[in-house]
Amino acid sequence: MSETSPKLRAELDGVPAYKPGRPPSADGPAAYKLSSNENPYPPLPGVMETVCAAAKNVNRYPDLACSGLMGELSDRFGVPLDHLATGTGSVGVAQQLVQATAGPGDEVIYAWRSFEAYPIITRISGATPVEVPLTAGEGHDLDAMAAAITERTRLIFVCNPNNPTGTVVRRAELERFLDRVPSEVLVVLDEAYREFIRDPEVPDGIELYRNRPNVAVLRTFSKAYGLAGLRVGFAVAHPRVAAALRKTAVPFGVSQLAQDAAVASLRAEDELLGRVGSLVCERTRVYEALVRQGWTVPETQANFVWLRLGERSADFAAACEAAGVTVRPFAGEGVRVTIGEAEANDLLLHTAEAFLKTL
Ligand code: PMP
Image (cartoon, rainbow, N blue to C red; front, side):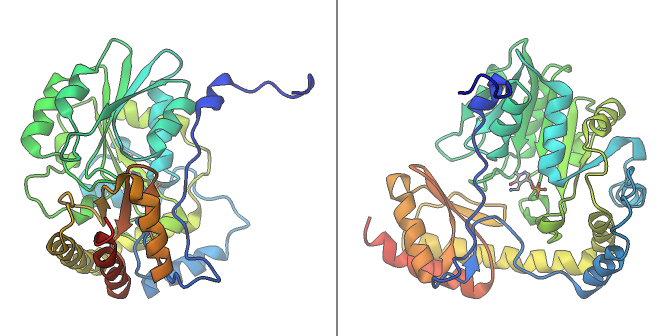
């Protein structure tokens, strides 16, 4: 390395790269993207109009405080304004949370495998990741996570449902876990897929946080609301934490297009949640068909399914791509497949059936 090259923080050497889901290749047969847990529906016409109207003012900075959106969120979720903070997607808010709580020498606990941004944002902050293996059933091992808490622990992510396995943590076990976490450790309930949950035993984090000052809830407009490309998410947390999140936010990070589209989406929630209902029906159809075919699939409450294919993960992803769908392989571990359009799901099911015979 040249002597004149800039000195970079040593922590960056350990930061893994975020691997985005592959888009369909332009020259191949793949026409459907089932690799990023996106919503397959295009924006509602009303939301599109709102975005186009906001585009007329892109020479201006957005509202720094996201006031319109914050007011709407406060009404919708029944939380005070000072319990809210927004960010560039919930991954942005997750990063703000880690920056607000953990630095060099501190520890951040999360299940593994879980959302791939956790190790990235933890290391960027200079903190040490503590990864607690999933159970044999692909779910969070909350007892092991509680046992992993030390005096250095500053934050714990609980991804519910878990990306990429789709498994959930239910009320009784989550409450028992929260009771064991010291009050100075922040527990972040990452509920990016909340709207897809149909299991009544899965608690709504926004109810759980109310009398627990060390609990914060992460939500996003990227999945159920179909605004992944606009980058807006939020946290619900007690005032000290929410204020810290506003400090660690990138100034003007959430564009006016995103703010206005999020407000329009909340106002069109019935229609959007109807679409979520259709995706949930498709999820049941895909899950049941896979099980009938003979696959072992963890029960999923998210908009994706997980196939633990181990060393065959890359082969399965290649077979899917050849059939016209891109999926998300995690080398040597498994493949996550987003629930998409019915035709895309059919292609996936045909491929899965044929592939099973090769195992
Ligand atoms: N949390 C989880 C568990 C996720 O799967 C994702 C998206 N892949 C996010 C947060 C971040 O989503 P966004 O930044 O688009 O809100």
